[in-house]
Length: 455
Figure (cartoon, rainbow, N blue to C red):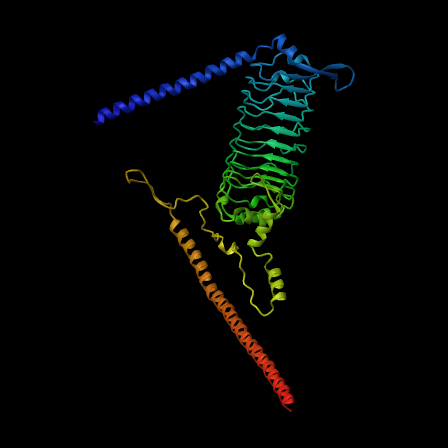
């Protein structure tokens, strides 16, 4: 293809892409314009009547009114008309097409608000704040920031999962907040949560690499950090009240990272599924040995048999076995005959494949190089080879000791057989002599009798 033809081809392609991009932007603009127009409408009387419920006393207790409004999955573009029911406390308008919550501005007694699965871009865009709000579910929207929520001082639960939030902010004054869900957003740093009384925190499906900003959450009991990019657990060491920890689908590959969880005495449920640490030899035994308080590991209940095997793997019962052995056989040498021992576990080094380095070159079907091995891999391999070599040398050194002990055992068996053979020979000689003695006595008696008769 000539240079002119190439230039013409790329210009035509760029023009088509430009038209496509312009068309998509125009389509989005028209959709947003249509939503704004539809949001000005009010709900029909039939929808309002079918959504109202729970007739009860008002907050002042002076008279009766409707306290709940459930208009979930009604294909609503607006909730205009709801402002006439000022005593509503429970509102569910999920699974609709709402883009604003301004009609709720006059409702000061709301305690529960479910606005999930809509087209909202702003969080709680009220003109007047409902001060009694305790629970807000605003997942599956298009919210990109958390505004200052200090005026909602009674807020206890906030669910902002599946949005477009990039930063945790606006919550520093919400001391009553206990449950915070920010799963599947765009968060990469845990911050601005110091000294809050959060009991449950969900940050699943974000872009978190380092565990920072958690050390002040001393009341935290449930933490979900699955589907992130976490490889180190040092930031969890201060969460002494933690009961449940979800770390599946991350980059955890070192057993030594569990050291930072040994201080969590109440930890009973740990999930490490879909991490490279699961490929370690005796994985479950290694985890249970370090965290003996676990009741559930990777969704599977732990058993007493597993804990016993974990202790045996590291020789926790070895001294007791030696003591019992020497009490019974004090002159013999004790030999550890365990099949699974901790020495069989591959040693972990600082140059472990922490960043998922590529150890070998990659080629296509035709033999062409696609991607070369990452730099630094050879050093990691050399360190691994050295550790394996040292382990092999230790094994070879232990073989002569075993052979010496085995030879002593064989000598003992040989001597025992010789002793038994000599004992049998002596016994046979003794029996023979005794029989001969009896026969000689009987012959003498016969001779005496014959002599008497002759006389």
